[in-house]
Image (cartoon, rainbow, N blue to C red):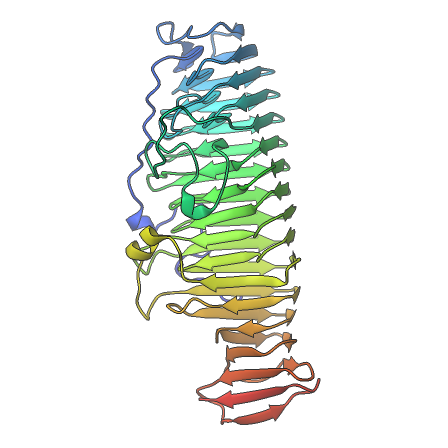
Length: 450
């Protein structure tokens, strides 16, 4: 595989390099629920916070559960340890939850190593931080053939914006809106979705946070939509997110990748009204490298498909169709997030931004404007028509080609596969080619310098 990152190998499971992952600050604080299961049995002392109906079997199976409530911060079902199946159930909650790190207000919460299957069910919430599902503290949650939808709502009176514990809305530097994440995975948990319909009005559909070193989140054959200013998926530091054969849409972003984490899309089709992927991170060690891998996917964005803000990331795309209506595929830039700028590394040896495009055809511009770290662009059996600026390192192999349609700036080892339209000048720096000017086949010119 071209440009395979030898350090990370596109990690999609436990990350052996996660030495700098922060301890989890996810701490479930709820003490009661409408239904509380502990190790497969009903905990009578913690159950009964609201009237509900349904059947709980001796083996911890919940059948035909029904609950509609506007009680703030109420958890419908909490599963603490053990193995439980929740089937053919309907939950509707309104009113505010609490900071979802506390897990208060979630419809279904899996915690403390619980193994939970949610099948054939529907969950709808209207309220700030009123998640449909949360998995945390080593739990495994699997959701089959279910519908999850969250719409957010007014924040509690007196709420003061904060990032981290107590947070009830997205951090301001992300430029997002809304105040509810439909699903949240935290603290060494694993979550899986199969043939589901997932909706978020804004903030997030499938989110990760506070990994404690490892979180895994996967969706298969599902439809995932974000109506407003939010994202479809988020891979926080230490988290790994995979979408297989999904249809997605977003009022703003497909995905956000932060720090030592990974995103992997296979056979995904979608459109977003903002940029495709925001890549950022407060990494302080050169071993921390995020990875994004897209295969056989068809993605449309209005803004840049990739915005990389002061980050180390390795992105690999194979056999994808990438369409950006405003004409920019990649934009690297200095972060405007003061916290991340102060905490991440700033050295000439930073890994930087690595992109590999294989077996695909691109139309659009690559703008490499981060002054602190290098960008490397690798094409293998791939072509691009558009401008490239900011002097990234350009490699064209296996019959790849580039036709510049506007003035460009690159670093090269050779000139094979490079062309430019009439009137277009490519300025190229090279340590092994003689300085000079070369006329290109389509009428443009290549100006080489050391």
